[in-house]
Amino acid sequence: MSEGRAAYHQAHQARAEAEAQRLWAQREVLQGRWHAWVALQLYQLTPAPYASMVRRALQQRRDAAGE
Image 1: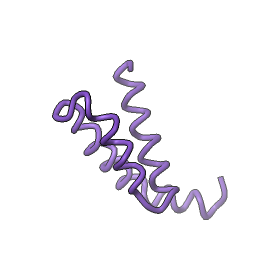
Image 2: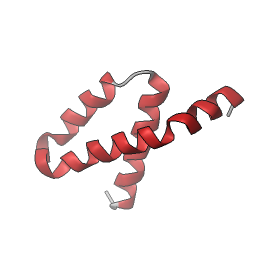
Image 3: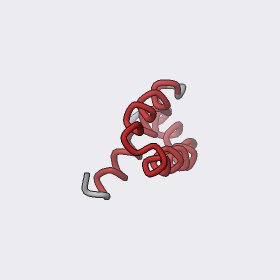
Image 4: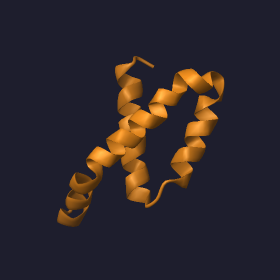
């Protein structure tokens, strides 16, 4: 990871984790509609490196939940 990329990651990690938690919390509320909804939410996030960080954090939650 380049120094600039590492610095960006470190600066935005907490915000990305919080966003992933917010999105993950909507699973029970939206149930079967959650996948389409979360895909749209991720698509709308900018910049792309931040969206990738949120996507990875969601994947970690999914893996931890055994899905």
